Image (cartoon, rainbow, N blue to C red; front, side, top):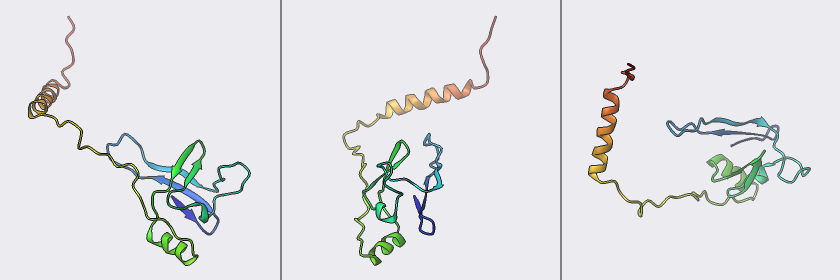
Length: 124
């Protein structure tokens, strides 16, 4: 999320992650962002605090962290930023591990599929 102090506009870009199934890129073009309760003005720097939630149209975005410049900007103005956090940690310790046999079978099936790729089906 980028906040432009010169004209109080906001732009949101989603990171591009290869093979994630999501496109990434621009999520919200640079624009003034209205506060959640309609008619209460536009988003200001005070509204963008770690842990705060902003409404972007029908979607809700939570601020998970800020960069060093933003942290110092708020510090100079006497507004402390809470520490960055990662709320969605996944615990995979209870997940069953695949056996060597299951992995081998999966690879074998994939190789069979590749061996016949492009051959098509025969019609009599």
